[in-house]
Length: 125
Image (cartoon, rainbow, N blue to C red; front, side):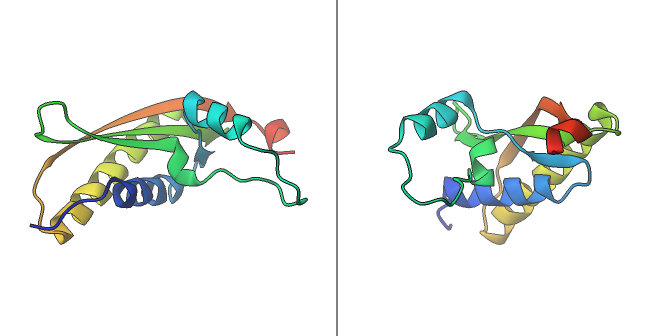
């Protein structure tokens, strides 16, 4: 059996979520944003961009029976948040299960989707 790296699952989940029309981005958890703010300031003029994986958390289930994936989404306005959240849930779950299967790992995957904000046209400006 191949070892599963959490970072790999984060990337798979982030890519699946960001591919969905209506997902404007992924929102990092507060702890990640706080750590980034406490980091030394950059001396160049390139704006600091947070990796999309920062909006995804992947943990082993407490009983070791599988994976729990949390996706924190910022949605684009104009679409029903519930519909987009359901699509994110289903596609992230399918992508992670598929990646685990490709690695020869059969484990249970649970996905939690949190909508942190709905971006309006004004937010994009």
